[in-house]
Length: 234
Image (cartoon, rainbow, N blue to C red):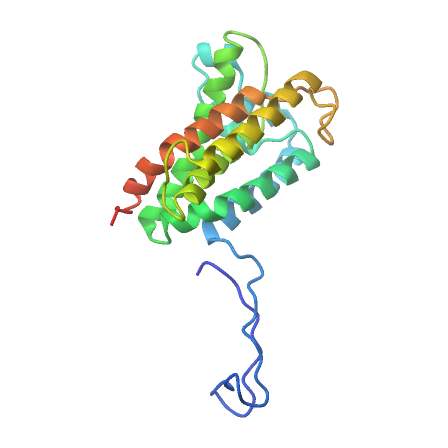
């Protein structure tokens, strides 16, 4: 079940009144109009940050670091996606995932293959975002946390789907170039201002490299992951 509804019992029996009959009520709107894997992922971001607050020492161990990657510490490629620097950081990424994950989740579908493809797509974009960050900070002892890279992958995929009206459109469709151009501009600004414009960032910098790498990964990979989920072109 992808959405949750609140419905009142039909008056006078099990038969619902028709639109031209007394007592008719329009269908209830869904509380969250997003596939359940997207909602689960959104809630998990908040839940993991609550756990992180309870066990703060885990951040140093599970964050992604280019220098530790060279030492064979690969777990940070995944674990860093579930860590955040502050409540505002976690909540912004949760909202980002909910907004851009919904069209991706609908496209990949509710079947087991679609659900598995959605989570794998998200994690893959996050891993590639980490590697994009590492490419610009090769061998540096810099720690990175956050779901922004993976969420940017959902944004890139959503742009392809908007351009193709629900299916992967052209790589350089107006939606992709428009959203991509805006995302590049925002990240250029963040690259120069650091965390000054991000609530709760403090003195921490912004991993703009991961954002752009994640977006590019989402644009390129939504087609192959759609095939993996069993979506075929008509």
